[in-house]
Length: 516
Image (cartoon, rainbow, N blue to C red):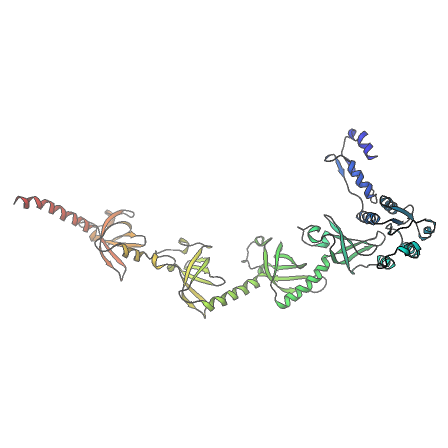
């Protein structure tokens, strides 16, 4: 009929076509209908309205029929569920639809090795039990019964009642995008919704369980009329996880977890199925810092409080783990620390008087005077927060837990560089860096200045240095004195002018001597 519809009527439709099925419709026929519907047509919308319980029951019955010589479908003649089951099973083997055990007498059952029994969801349990009992008494069944399989016991177990709150075991028989379907070994088909599999919204049912898995569950709700049961794996995991969390709190165990959300005044994560809240003050971040920077990050923490009663919740602390690690690092540091030992550390903070460097759990300070051979006004002229420095221990105060660090290297000492390259009598170019009333200071090498006294600027009297020199001028000077003890250098412009005059006089006197 559906095929005929598409051939004759579909092309005349002016709107979209919606296709739905009766909730208890035969899933095999429904599958055949889907095959005749035009593919990839945006104007056709299909709603899979077959009930999950119906789908599972029909699928199970079909699998049973495929492996049976005879199927008995028990239920009312006018029961939609039972009729559909009969239609499904009839496709795979000889199938009989009976309402009760009395009808077995009128059936002429052929010899069969495997006989399957199924029933509609609304079929009373006692009727199914009667059919099972009659079949067990049947000589044909008795002759072919597998001695290792107690058929009566299996049927008895299938009618076992389950109750809300009861712990049960189930075998996963199907997994889809929203739930897992499990076999409980009873007449109930079990359903575990995604929310009852996990509280991780990023995961799908197939990420949690697979077909064939045997899992522990808690019964949430039972519907005997429909033959279904709502179950939860998450509640079982939460209880087991809660017990481990309580133990972790007692033992101070360090746990790991991924931060799932930022909430009011803290962050949350789930570990072993238990929700853990970590207050902002215990995240290890500075006061006022953005908590979003921890989102989706793996963190280490300990449990400091566990709630009692129905709500299984816990409070954790990242800061406590960080503090413990710092104390361990400090202990290791002081065991091996000695003056002169070098370390590689990161600059944590800057002050007007120096830089604090993390040596791996313990901080040391590089005084501003130790950051550069040159005179600087602030540490930021040399280093920035986050820089990695090679430092060495200058001094240790174990009682006060204070560590003084050095950063300047002897080979970089400008004075040593100057001494190795220059001596008294050398003529060099120098840059005027400052002017005073008594002279001018000129830089010879980076970090080393020499003084040109006012009397050494020119070969005549200079009243004001600024009349002759300006900051930034590059001048030729002669090194006239080096005071190594005081690290002072005297340089002269006048000495070069006097040398020039002497050379000029010698040139003038030379011809007269020749004439004589």
